[in-house]
Length: 302
Image 1 (cartoon, rainbow, N blue to C red):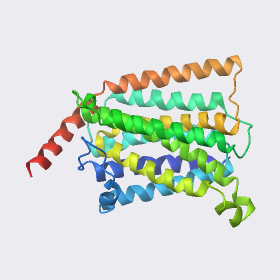
Image 2: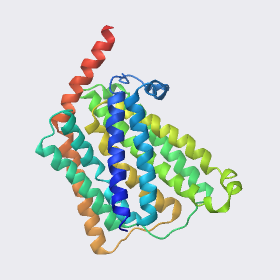
Image 3: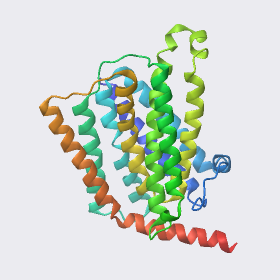
Image 4: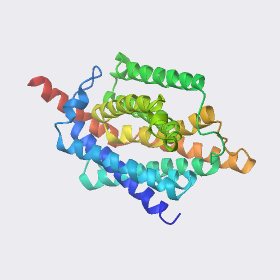
């Protein structure tokens, strides 16, 4: 457990660094009207985006290693500090004036997520899920992703704050997709102790590659679409929440349902909702929206 805490903190730092670097690399691309299937290939030419990708991979390694030494209930709440680290980066880099209200909103969301994960403490279950449940989970996740893309790029998204709204929707969809990837990783890891034949004869490594690539493309669109303050909450919050729900559905895990646990879970959800509402009125979103409009206008002029 002594090793799990610094490893989890290192994972949070790396994933926050990844988001900031990938936002810096993607912010000049215009994805305001439709998805760009070739966006990742364009981003590969940006050194700062590649640095963000390297930080993402390193963060994943730190997270997996932390889980070897500590329980999920310890590691996952520490990973929620990623949101506060991102705000720290924004303050340091001058990416909009981060006010006390913004810090409180981010702290509320991080605390809410941590309390929920600690109170729910999913446990039990099986290491592998039936194919029928996987089909249903995959279809629902794909449906949510397609619906999110449709809403993000619809005419209704062209309102007074289009960039922030689009980034928030795409960030939420990406978080849900990452939760599905985490579930596939659990299925994949259950095969590792049975030799290469058992691993590569199973569907999980191939779905992991496809789902991972699709999630990276979604994340790239979210980071290119608008302010990091809009997309990051979806990354940080919906990833572990959707992974927990999939854990219950696919692997028959059980959340704690004693009255005291339910009370803390309700408090956690209230903190999450309050933080999201407060952040949705932040000037960070409006400020970067104006910047995004200026970038788009410059690209159109040339």
